[in-house]
Length: 486
Image (cartoon, rainbow, N blue to C red):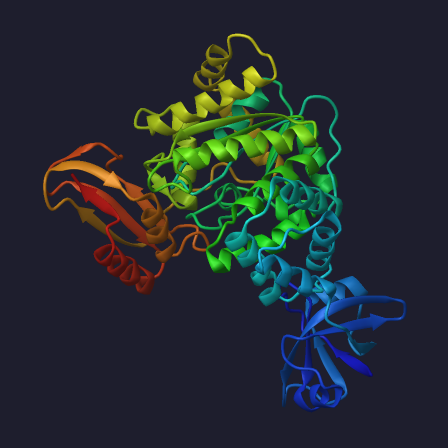
């Protein structure tokens, strides 16, 4: 069936085709099923939605993803063909039944995710299957390889360093500080980061407060050539498109399955052509993993890295409490700048962890007097100058005022004692306030974990642009034990 394109100029995040309800009925196609949209020899799989009254029975609305891929213009005609259920659906069912997937089966699933042959619901089943049923180390290696093969790669020569945290820890915005220290020491560090999945903000969300984070591969390589490093969002580069689509679903489900976490991190390091990688694994009662699980993850990262000939160091760090004072994009960037600028009231825990990570990267590449070198670069202001250079190269405004949300409330201690934060609930509170979409939303911690507090002293301030969000955040705080006073 041929249909006339009605231009809408809307981004859906995936290929969508909207048909008149009667047209869909004639085609015997239902909402969320798949069709092939074709123009001459080029085609793309799109998910169906229906509408009546907005378009004629011989017309079709297409999301910008379809229009761009097929280079369509208003009033062009496209051919709509039904597509059969992809084989990957049966492979997902096999995994849901605790089956072991071979390399070819995993490749089929990953390829179908990239080509949009699977709906979000089907990807959600895959994520749930991996979460519930797990994967062997060989399956994880095969998934890593498949994610790399279906994406693009950066082309850097020689020693290329990187660092990554498994996440889950509130604050912990060490990456911009570590990247600035390492690049100031002459190392090449093309840092591509993800957006938040379960936390209040990811590195890309935070850096976006000051600068662009979405670049083409050519643009990113030019930035790294000039500054020695970058702080970009990996999703815009097409390095691991399957992973980016999976992460979108994980974010909706609030799940981060271990095999996917391993494959996601390693695939992106391989795609960035990294030769030396430091993995930060925070562990603790309220972190993503406990000590035993952290040790297990460490071994798995080392096995995968060995397979792909990458030199990796896994560092197990204290994940029992938030790192830094700010939770949320604007507030975390303020912490970063206070450390780089060596301000008197800077968060020392964030500075110390950043120095530890930079030292480990220097050790990994064989630099001498690593800790002394990292401290010298930070305290001399060289790291701050390098950060400014990166922000400017990324079309940023280093002088931008970082103002938290206009609506706020202060939480005070109802008794004296020692502060104990629940990391997961701190993140959920910040997300309830609007993080990471609302860049100005978040929490400012007046007291660190394990710090003494007197009755009536400030514990934290909740910020948001939305009065409704503030009300929701206050309700969340009252109903959940975000903070204990021991």
